[in-house]
Image (cartoon, rainbow, N blue to C red; front, side, top):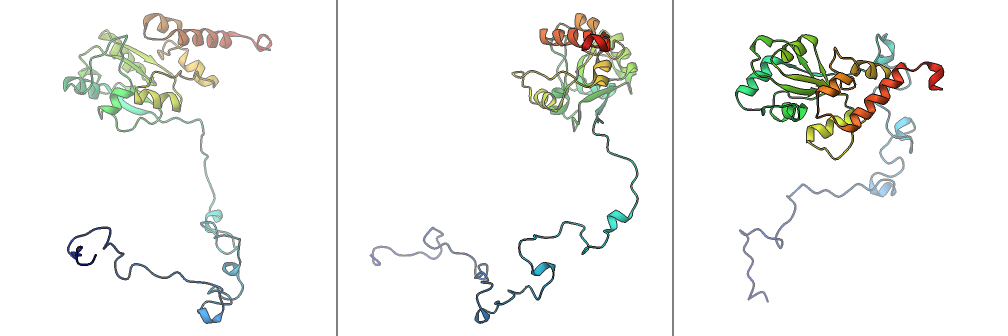
Length: 243
């Protein structure tokens, strides 16, 4: 067999693969008696926290039982769990992207969404949605139709002056992710907080729950119309009627 098969040391194959020299070490065998070199206390010393078994490692910032330095400094403020961060987008940037053909022309039935702005690099992070701002409104020359999370009132006036339209739609994290990916097979959640319901039901904000906005924008689904009807009825109810 050895005469028929000759090993070529220059050729790399499964038959001559091995770890690099010095890269593999024998594991230490702790607690196997004094003859092994690590018997008795197994290299942990005598007593103390690190000599015990089962208590795990101390948490980050642990200082042996004394008051940690992070607890000695006073704290100010709080974290608002309901706070939302919107990606700002100015009208001059939208017009520049339109002129270069990076985003398509829009219509009422096919408005521009966060999907177009994010994939065209017009914005670099969607955060909790897009907010349209009026900076550079004098450079806007093309009628555009938008479906975004928020829009300032000067931006709405500048867009509608050219024949465009703005619809502000509520989206939770899952609905925003579906919009970014272009998915339309799942239903969007309705707003549940009173502040959101009141904001998206106002005409001045071009909220998608306002009857006039629904009438002017045919792309809104029948489910959106049903949700708007229920939420607007709930908003006008008295507390004794809701019970």
